[in-house]
Structures are given as C-alpha cells and as structure tokens.
Length: 120
Length: 108
Image: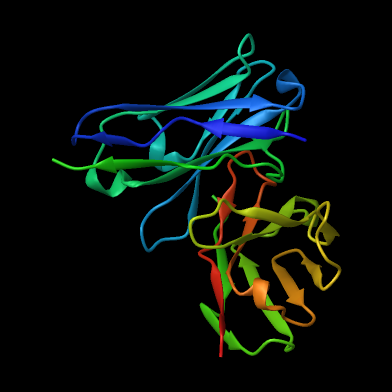
C-alpha cells in the first residue's frame, strides 16, 4: 500500500520561497512520478506540475512556469516542490500525489496536504 | 491548455437519489485520460474513476463514469450519506493536467 507523507505547515512572507517535501513508502519510488496539486481557500483543485522520479523530467502548469521547481531524491524516496516569489494568493493546501512514470496519469495515492500561508 | 467545465456547481439531493455530474472539455482528448475524484473537508482527494469509466480499487459500484470526446459524466446511482462531498474531473491526456472547478453534492 503506497503512502505519502508531507512536511509540516509553513508561514511565509510575500516574496519568499517555500519548499515542501513528500516522502513515499510502500512502492517502488523510481517507477512512478509525483504530481503536485493545490487547493486554495474557496477554490477548486489546481494542478501545479509533475515530476518523474525515474529521470526527473518535469511539466509545470503555465501559470507557475519560472516560479516552481520540482525535484526528486530516489535515495530517500522523497519529492520536493519549491515555489518562489510567493504572493498572498499562493496561500493554499499543497498536495503531492503518485502519478505516471513517463507522462501524467490518474492520481491514485495522495499525501495528507501541507498548508502554506503567505502573509506579511 | 484543456479547460474543464463542470456542471452544475451545486447539486442538492436526498440520500437514495441519483446524482448526475457533468464535465465538459474545451477540446477533445482521449477518454483514456479522464479521472474523477471525491473530496471531503480537510481530507485529501480520493480517486474514484480513471480512464473515464474504470472504477479505482475499492470504489463501490454505485459510482460509474462514462463519456468520450469532450463530454463526460459521473453518476452516483443511489446516494449514501457518505457521498455528500465535492467532486472534480481531471484530464491527464496532455502533458499538463487540468481539473474542473468542482461540483458540490449537498444534502437537500
């Protein structure tokens, strides 16, 4: 049974960066990708991007291009999402989810979510 | 980017009734790459349907998905109390996935 555990909540000031981690267990980490999805207050789910744990290829949603970096560390089965130039509207719960190896796929296992609050 | 539009925004129904949720795409894509999720407050989303019509592991058969091209439907045949939640469609046919804005199924 796959299990994804995310890092704790963060509070950041506008303009800062945040790095959220997602540690995987219960499956072969290099055989899948990881997608990041966020849920802002009063909004719906929003796809942020995808990273392959095999070859570290990435796809990012257009609106986050240049501000987001997704990486993986196969030695610790951990994925990371770093979001920079934070604004108040980046306040959201960020989820990692298990995804396809080569291209995005249906998201079958999810982390518990990490609340990122951007406030001065 | 493929835009997904869900309707209605809110569905008010009673337990035992049938729920029909719609998801329309701005352009056609393979039905193999359409999923549905359920999300309850303070919980992570749960995968219900993938490939437009295949139930995920452990999902009751009262949940069914259908559709192709640009029009997709999630049907809950008889609502149970635990089914009242927000439902999202998700396309992963392009290299950049997108979600619909969600349909809230609430108790009437």
